Length: 80
Image (tube, rainbow, N blue to C red):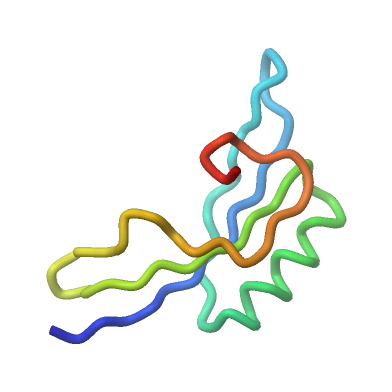
């Protein structure tokens, strides 16, 4: 059972009715790459979050709660 950590950046823009609309998540190879991507996107997006999740890719079993290591701007309550 090999565990691996995956890194993602999720950006948000203004949607209809004052809701946030998410962009497609961006997969990154490392925490450093995700952090650089998140910082760059934060300059133009309403909100940005970078997070990691650890699990077994063969089983498709990943942690229920991701580890958030960057957040900036307006984000959905799931990232509080």
